[in-house]
Image (tube, rainbow, N blue to C red; front, side, top):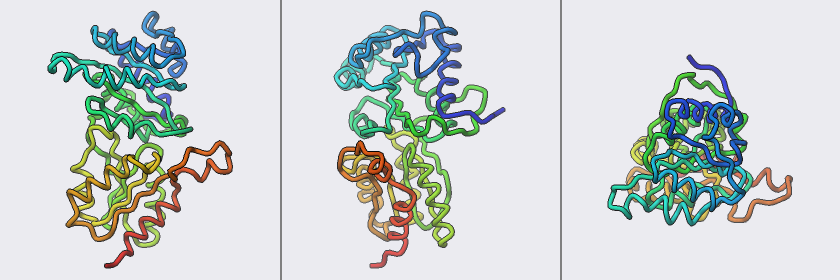
Length: 309
């Protein structure tokens, strides 16, 4: 049975069901402020932490190394870079594969830099970027059950988005992309909040006679390269839509992958739709046009669809 709930509520439901199923799951953060009600339902397992990401991410890593499955909530800022990069990501290899760190770090973004390219860069971490309430719940369940550290990137602009979500618990495998829409003329790869932007662009393109295939990777590490390369092999054209700044983001990574592995299939140069390489503006007037929008995606897809040698 499924019903419509918000992206935020889907994550809370996943946490609730996993904490009910497994007593080793604990939450560390601002007294569960991003997941209200958990502290009442699970006394002693929702731990209020100081406003220092380094402090409570370090505590979460320590708990994970001692048999707990902590979910650290970095929803209101404060990122324990040193603890994540130098400890959580390296423990398995440092101890010859004998150590595991079943840690989830919830990281909100959307009013500043996108965190997923930074963490995707580092071996030893798994990075999740859900685009829908259905994905948010299924990927959170998988993240909690995974034995490696997982960075769970939640876009603030998706918190109130509503979608169909099953009542029962379910897990979505990492490294398996979702083909949101099929098409044979151009491949659109998009992440997080850019997935609905790419979907709407595909609808507009269809009215112009261009059939766009929309792919949501869901996770950036591991990345489902087979689905992306298979799609480009059929369409011969690629547009990557990424909300992260253009230098060393996922758009550049995926573009390089396709240029190397599917160069012979390309019928046009690859297009990347990203923000400019500048800090996000503080002015609302300038902030609104900063991320990629539907028209920019449409324009990029038409460019590759019409390109001729």
